[in-house]
View 1 (cartoon, helix red, strand yellow):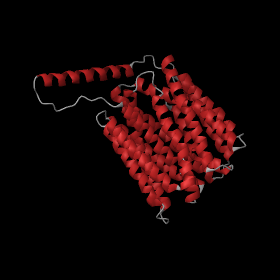
View 2 (spheres, one colour):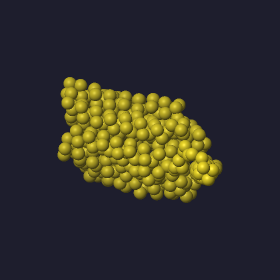
View 3 (cartoon, rainbow, N blue to C red):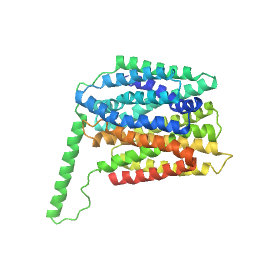
View 4 (cartoon, one colour):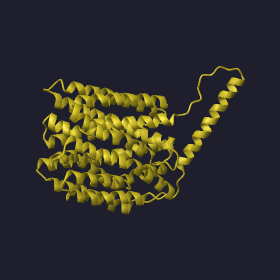
Length: 395
């Protein structure tokens, strides 16, 4: 039941994810303005993620930061309706983002502390299925509102109201865990396992026996680099996507929402499958496969521009497949990150993702406006491939 507030939060931001870029264009902004808005917010989110993660681990209080996030989003989304210029909207969005991100690290810690390590993959997958359904409903709501001609003010007020519901539900249903030790136990278990394996290998060497295994730990630096590169490629690709559908493919707003509804719906299915097939033994190989798959899909988008009769359909299919692959990636990287990153560093995952997002949110729209969408697709595909290499090195 404690997840119910997050469900309504995702409804709001699912609706906002497609609406906001189109709204910037509607009030006289450009692709570069969209890039600046998302990039500034993402750069501010990086230190904010580390700060909120450190603070919640230091105080061992998680509910208060989640409530702060939802309440701040409620207030600032209402202020969006009063913004009369792109510049003011950028400032409001940037400030909101630094407060909104406060929910991320506490949420990850809550899941990792409420379940054992063996249950993490399924717990993260269930969370994503549940909140992903909220995101999907938010997109459906956007489709209906745009189809029936609701204005921008009404849309922003709905987003604000949904965050208010999330705040109220979390205030009632959410409680901090009584004991916080699961991540520490996992760290101790990994150290003991590594030591035992080293002793076995040393004994084999002393006895003159052949070795059929290597003593190897995960490369945390390579894992972190892979997260940054994956986030960079994703935001380069997705930041200008709504405008790509609107301007290049001349699709109406409700059709764009419909495509994102399908993307989100397939993502929910992906989360469900990731949870049902989750295991510590397979998570590392699945990460590499999904990153490579998204790299191939990004390169396929280049072909979309060469088939004008079917480009909207092909682009929609590729976008949907990307949502499916992302579901597996997120479940397994979240689980692995909570294992690799020590207590006190709960904000590291969000911070690393923020670094990639900050750069990609500017690069994507900038490349689209100055060099065209083919350069966006090629750049994203190459960076996805580099992320694949980084994850292979990390394991």
